[in-house]
Image (cartoon, rainbow, N blue to C red; front, side, top):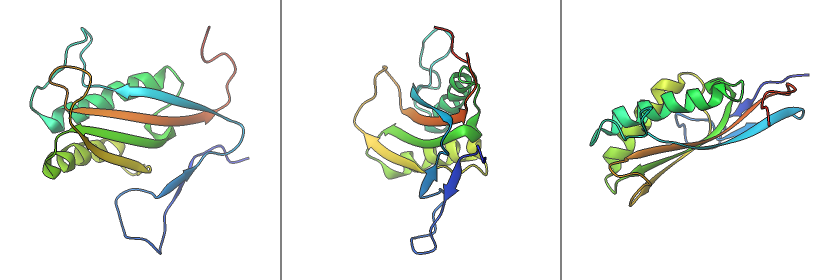
Length: 141
């Protein structure tokens, strides 16, 4: 049984730097992660005014949350990137920083500009869905 996420591309659609879809094989645990925010350990937003640095910190925090699920970035099947800006270049700046962190794992993603995010001075947030091979007792209730 193949227990890896399949990234699906299309020859009939525009060439983009992400897969158009992903497939999670049966028998895997699926995790829906809360939005990863650019917060430090004290709960403060870091890198005020810096889209790229906030985006990288969001990925770093996403990695930490994934560890709690026995997962890595390669287990991510989908992301939604929210950027507090109406300026497309700010969205691209955040996107490029995030794509660099994901490397060759170019998961299907949605990039959206929003008017405001939850924390003061927050510019970026990343929602994710991940899947890992079923392992009993990963999460202790």
